[in-house]
Every structure is written in C-alpha cells, then in structure tokens.
Image (tube, rainbow, N blue to C red):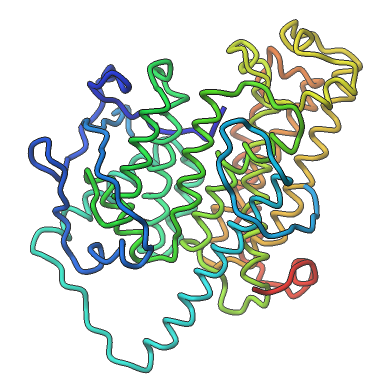
Length: 436
C-alpha cells in the first residue's frame, strides 16, 4: 500500500502496455535518449545537485487515463543517513535514519535564501531559452494540472490560490508521485520487477541532471532546477515501492514508520520547498520540515487503518506484528475480518497514534507561505476525519471503507481556508526544535 498515483505502462517485459490512455508527448526522437530542453536553467540542474547520471531509461511511452487525467510522537533524533537495507533490518531507529534527510532538506532551503540575498546585490543574467521550449514546458505543466484536478480535486482547488510558479511545480511533483506509485499499486503491478524500479530510478537521476525523457519529466526537471528540491526523497519513495515488492509484514512500528516515510513522508519533504515558508515565520526551517514529515506519516497511517480489509484480501498486513500479538491478535484474526473487543482496543491505540502525528503536523502548517496553507489545511482536516469515520463504523475496517461525505467536505473547506488565514505564531513549534 503506497501513495496513490498514475499508471506507467510500457511494451517491455517489466511494464506491460494495457490502458487506452492519453499519450504524453515524448521529447526525444527514436530510441536514443537525449535532452531537447536546453535552457541554461535545465542544463544546470545536474551541476546544482551533483548527482551522477546513469544512462538506462524506461524505454516506453507513458500514458494517462483520459477520463480526465487519475500519510505522533514528539521525538528527539540522532543524525544519520537513510540507507536502503534489502534485509529490512535497521541498526538504529527509523526516526533517526529519516532525520538526516530532514536536516539536508532544511539546509537546502536556507542556502537558497542566502543565495537570493546575495543575488539582490548583483546583476543576474537571464536564462537562455531556446525558441519553442517555453511552449512545451507550458503544455507539460498544463498536463500535470489536469492530472491533479482529476485525482486530487480538493487539493487542486487549494493550489489555485498559490502563485503560478509554485502551483505548476506542485502539480509536477504530484504527477511524478502518482506515476511512481502506480508501478506497484496499479492494475499491472504484478508485472513489475525490481529491475523496472531500478530503471525508473535511473530515469529520475537523468531528470535531475536536466535530461528529461518525456514532457512530464520535463515539467519536474524544470521544477527541481528552480526550487531547492533534493533528489533523496524521490529516491526514497522508489525504495518504498521496492519494499512493497518484497515485504508484506512489519514486525514493529519502527519498521512501519520507515515504510510510511518512504511512501508518504517523502511527499512532505518534496513539497515544502515549493510551498515556501512564510517570510514572517520565526520557526526554524528544520521544524517546518518535521511538521511536513509528520503530516505524511499521519496520512499514510490513516490509509493503512482505513484499508485493513482491502489489504488483507491482497495478503498484506500493514500493522505492527508485535502490537497485534500484545493485543492477543494475529494475521488470522485480520483475515477472518471479525470486529471483536480485542480489535476495538487495538484500533483505538492505532488511531491515537495517527492523531498524535496530525497534532504534530498542524503546528507547522501556519508557518508555510500564506498562499500555500489552504491545500495543506484541507488535506490535514479531511484525512483526519477518516479516523473519525472508522470510529463511527465501530472499527469495522474489514468490510466497510471509511470515507468523508461530501457535506462534511463542504464544511471542512471553509474551515481550512479560515485556518490558512492565521499568521505564523511564535508559540508551540518554536520551542520544540533548534535551528539548523
């Protein structure tokens, strides 16, 4: 179970073509990959991020469904580096592993702020853009917006309040995440192998190095050249897809936390540089990233609790095995799908944990740029209500899918908008973290 996204299809053995989807326009001729967006901005992406390029590509057309276009605890962390471990064993806690990525992202944002201050004191030469490339990029971003509008209607509505540049960038990130998720969660997921994900990661590196394969890659390539977005969260999301191929049980919450970071917490880290931090915010950059991470974890835990029955029918149990055992439960109880007192007690604890992450997340939302707060508040409020619906269903997440009704959504949207108008506060979040 991962974040939700658009299907990537291919005539290769790993990615099978099967959906009558709208073709994206490739930016290459023939089978030999090459970059055609040669503006200095995109050409310099590789220099900026210093990632080694690989040459392999997913040699395929990427298509979109044309019915339109279809994630606590207050913790102290030690600093380490996230390293994918095929065995699934961790030498230190997942929170410690993830925290280094948070520090890195925060440092990138602070560096960009310093660079902008320096640029104000000197003449900056405009980017050199070849004729025709601006039109291609504009069309690419428009496609991304169509995807977001079809499959994340509420979030898309909120993005319309953002500045045009931020709006397009968040659409580009959303589309890449959808495409990545559908590799293992889409209708042809059974044909996906680790080798296919390796090629997708290689293509990601090319994209960050200014060599997009198709027009949708070009939108993200342009985005990462304009904003201080690092490749690590994107690579970590792909690692989450690898986990879905090899792992269907999680021994402890520590293991599950790492999975939630990979498939959803990463989205928060990708998005903060795009959303922007309010100029009058006194919170540390690090603390804002921590809040974004917490929202991703909270959303994914909510997905997991909502989809227990659906996942069980696929032979998957995304619940900590040790906590199930402590509650006197096992996989057999989940597959049986019977709501018992033991199950209710277990679910209450899981919901309490997810709400704690939501509490941690909302402390940072007001620190975002004012034009970016509404979609984040809407996401937080609506997802949090899914937990309420699980309770309302008497914890029957085996055969009843918890969802927020349209009337409740309509009530939540103006509430989210009102919350988005609240300016940054020095209270709460400021006292919990140190600046980097």
